Length: 541
Image (cartoon, rainbow, N blue to C red; front, side, top):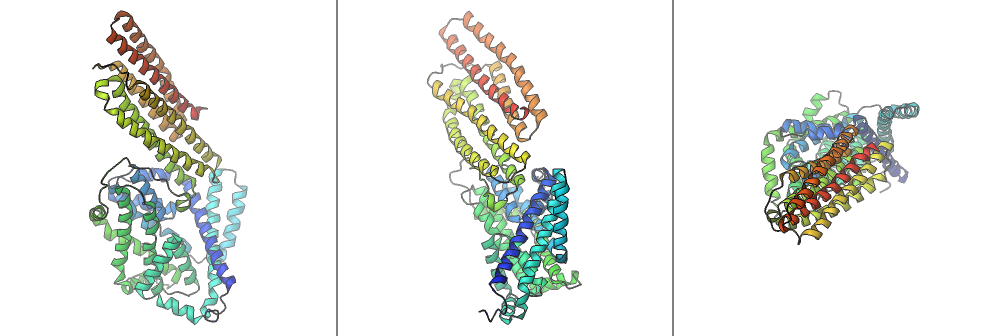
């Protein structure tokens, strides 16, 4: 084998692996700091994924251009759909756009400036050192990451240059021109490393030494589109039917695109060569990947409804639908970028808060209309079990985030979120205790206490808004909620005095039990408002 590969030795193998590692390190550094420079743009453009398919495609393109991974985008969509933060129908167009956004990497690395890589690294590092502002430092980290990408390519390319003298290796590369074999190799390799960007990086590294032809590169690129589906499929394990359909749509779109091109690869290559007249192989590879994904998206775009239909056929509805379990991303598989992870944590805490909010609304019926509300007791108990499990998963996820290398601002956000989760748990615990204490002692009556219900409504709304203010990191909003909570004390005192006076005026047992319950609910809401006040103070302190 050593003779067949010529001068390619163990040192060259480690050089290729080292170059690939530097390439991926640079890619991660560049994309992570691009997201930091963009600030909240990622979350905002995800929220713009409306029912308009065209907007969805644009959103998918922009998000993936920042994340530099279509697999990561699809994994985020799966978790959003699983947690009912996005519908399956809205996610399909975003998936189509994600495949366009992921081609940005190849277009960047195809530039023939690898001999300037160390200069780019030096400029990026030195400017990062002298920069004072965090945002400016992030910009220079992007430049530093770009330099590492080119340096990693140069290392790989140089290490593989000796293979030009190996007829055995050249024969293998030529065999990849067989479309079926090339697709298989591209799919298997990308599935194993779970990174189509790494696959394209290696192909471009080979192309720089003229070790691979565009005829062999195109089938591998097509196979990489299939292999990258593995990450999404793994992320969908154990999720609801809607979330599994996201992965199914991703697979159908990518496999369908490959089948669309597989029968006219030579024509497609001629098309790429026509638009790349200089014949530069790295640029041909980049243009082939971009054209492949753009054309596939354009072809599939009119058939989004059909894609949705077949995904539903592939993944039938859950036989016993339950409240979906929130799926947290594996930090190593999606990204270690705080921006993406904090998007997940914020959305998970919203879901967590909404569970407790739903428990409170159910308890309002239970407390203020006992005859009509007793049926809610079992529903509240089930929600409490779900809320406990979600809290455990949330705290585990936040503890893993805080162990990463975060900025001071991000550490503060994570600590605020942990405090918020525990404060919300306090309300759920108080409600659970109330249920255990009163469920057999409620008087049998059918009356509606409008004033009390209105106060209940205001208390629940203040709880929800105080949580949202912390998640938005909005100090002015927290201050407004805090002031409103103080004004509720006046309403509480008025209601308490009315109930006390009613007991004095009517000594009947029914009135006594009714007002006793009324006073007890007021005490419970006082506890809820007190917790909401502490939540508002998370930012104010």
